[in-house]
Image 1 (tube, helix red, strand yellow):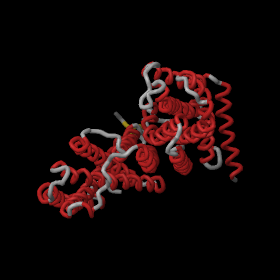
Image 2 (cartoon, chains in turn brown, cyan):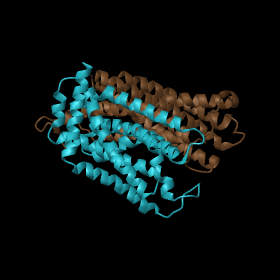
Image 3 (cartoon, chains in turn blue, green):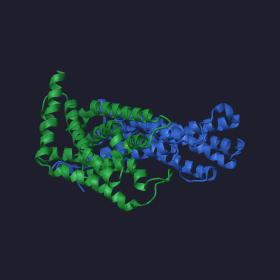
Image 4 (cartoon, each protein chain N blue to C red):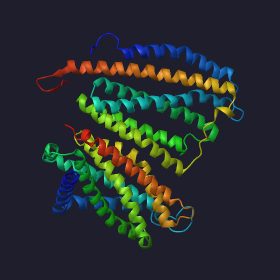
Length: 234
Length: 235
């Protein structure tokens, strides 16, 4: 594995990033100007064009994190661990923006910043689970242990999410039911789809950048290794 | 083959329980801690505050299912942490690693020992809660025991998994609850709901769904932990 030059992940990520830019611009125009305001909620509803795509990006990134964690345990390639870490970190990022935009949307619509609604609560718990992944990694110096422990935390956490969702759903419900594309104005659906594609590509770009950073960090860690003390200096 | 694994797991259970029996101090401290949590809730919420919703009974009686399970959750985390600290102190975990056979035996041995310790602690805690909050538990004891076994199994299964994972970490006292509590939220939710339904009656027949949820959480946690435990205790 060479540490100089661009990896294929970085090249693909750059393509995704370059594609994402014009699509975000088109999506924002479609969502903020072209599509009509919501019949009930008015202009406020336009936050949907960043709120919902955030969850698409979150799901995509966490799935990448989970799959790469499973593969890492099986094959032990450091690159798989970098990708798992990139997936979880980008997932945490979009999970946070999803919660924040949801909260901003909830305030004028439901009258509260926070409500104990199933999807809101589930995604908040999901965020705590994956922030735990990042925190545990921070306390492990050995790259092999960091990858292994991280992978196990990611796998157990990811598989628990459905159980969290069912438990909270039975507990209470308030969130609007997912709108079906058939009941929503056609232009809104198009704007939303464009933004979903843009966010997915943006998540891919960010993951590829995070992957590159992790790869370089690993290279630096190797350089920093002091064989005398069998530990890192400083 | 399976018999040999069972024997290995059982040897581990026996060893852990023998340590607990000989050095009662740890168990006593844990049970005392759980009781202390219940007592603290009594001070925090006030013994005479009236109960919500129904208007009858006290606030403590109304909230008792939640308070009880939070106390057990806190104690369970301590028990799981302790069970692996004991192994680390004298290099016990290294010895266990070099034993032949499947690592699943190691997992189920530690899990069953933790489960036994926690169930014993709950047997002391339940009558204490009944006296402290003046609850009438006698009639619904079999149902409560069932819920307690299912819930404690999930608690011990995840507790053993994450305690083994964090045993070597510097900040394990902070990290263990941080990892453990979020995945146990559905379990606590289901346990509290099921306990409240048992204590206050179940007009809508909801109990079965919560018990099913507890059972599926048990199956998931046991399956994932057992299948990955060889990687958890890897050196």
